[in-house]
Amino acid sequence: MDFRAHRVHSWGPMLSGLKSGVSDDGRSLSSYELEQDADADADADVLPTSYGRDILVVDDHQTNLIAIRAALQPLGRSLVLARSSIEVLGRLLEQDFALILLDVSMPGMDGLEIARLVRARDRSRATPILCMTGSSQGEAMLRGYELGAFDCLATPIRPEVLRAKASAFIQLQDLAIELQHKTLEVRQARAYAHELIAQRERFATAVLEQQRQQAAETDRRKDEFLAILSHELRNPLQPLQTAVEVLEHDPRAPVPARVRGIIQRQVHHITRLVDDLLDIARLNAGKLELRREPVALEAIVQEAVQSCRTTIEARKHQLEVELGGAPTIIDGDPIRLVQVVCNLLNNAAKYTDSGGLIRVACGAHCGEGFIRITDTGKGISPILLPSIFDMFVQERTTPDGAGGLGLGLGLVKRVVEMHGGTVCANSAGPKQGSTFEILLGLADQRGLDAFQLSLTRTPTGPQERPLRAVVCDDAPDLCELVADLLRLRGHEVIVVEDGPAAIATICQERPDVALIDIGLPEMDGYEVARQIRRALTEVRPRLIAMTGYGQASDRAAAFDAGFDDHIVKPASADKILRALYGTQD
Image (cartoon, rainbow, N blue to C red; front, side, top):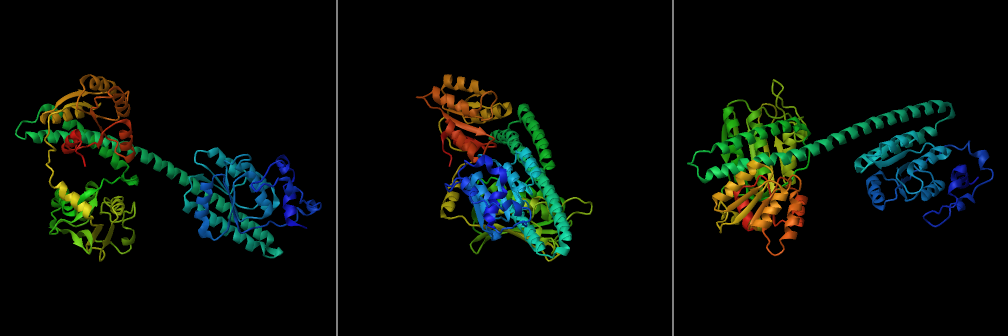
């Protein structure tokens, strides 16, 4: 008997509604039915389940097919690609498969109906099916399980997860093939064992999928919370920084009660935000953004040492700092790198008994910049060393259970690697101290030139003609302090607190420059800029977006709306004053 004809016939009446369909290669589906054998019915029930080696991938999107093929290539199995329900049925008639990856959202006959047909056919009843569906289509997943799918994957699919699951099912099918070749005497035991394995796999897969979904939801909520929190943290930092710079303008004058009140309120705000951050610190694996510039490693080390000096002195440690002769210039984010060095210094102070020695050295060696921190503390066990920079590793705890590496060293490694560098840890063992070393690439000639240029800048920004300015922000403390900063430099300033007021004031007063917040009530800063540009076509005041939104996309949106410059809170007085005249780098 012709097996292909049997496969066609075994679909039975399920194909009757599709006789007029056309496959992707141009053949009508009825051409398959012409190959049916009249005696197929008599043999259909006695044919054994058939297993193939190829993997059938069903998806109507070419990009998805390419991505899946790349993910499964290491398995060493040939992939058969199908882009429509008609083509799927044709492929299943032509051969058997080791695994079917099935997109639920197919045009025409959807993936769930295809799965039902596959399960209703004797030869393909045991073929593993992995349904692929959007993460929001939970109902589709449940229907897939009800129709006999071995597993359901939510898109976008991680290649390593897809590869692992496909490999597991292929291995299970290889085992089934081996068991099928056993003698008839062990057939009942084989079927029982196979069913136990399948049930265990389905149960384990269901549990893993549930855990994955829970973890994905936790990550999503954490990322959203961190994004909001990072924005809110910038708002109190800006008035604090500006208040300090206002006071520095006349350090002998008494601090006004209004400025003291602003500082007290914002410090209280920051304290609350930091407490919130501590609650989610161990979940902080979100993306970091680098603001790179030419910077000297010596300056990084000096600032970090100054920040950590109180902690080091409180534990009565001896601190030795060895800086290189000439400046070691790298291209890096100074704020992030100071945090990295502070983290390592605080670890050294924490895990060194009182009265210990901490050495910090930096410089250049063999074409790389280095920062090396050595302590005489409790050391690191050889078992822990390979995983010491992994996220959430916490083994060097203190006797009371406090401390531990947790998140800190994981973030150190990530930030250093984002700079294209490496970080390593060495220790002779417990109570033998430890050494952490960071290696970073040196800046090129362009970076060296930019660093030399930065040394010629004055700390208070350019001294140019007085300007008429408008400051618009819904945070009253920030508005007043920025206005005070500009007035102390001789500028005339008008303060407004919302978008409509900013438009009216700017169109009436025709100032030279306006600093506008983006997150305004009623009307955001983007719309304010667009309306000003439409209203003032001949006289164009310089518009500066001063905002807590600092992503590259936020900067692009500001320029698209008509802003001339974009500065991120907290901004120094030098940055604000340079933005007034358009002398930013």
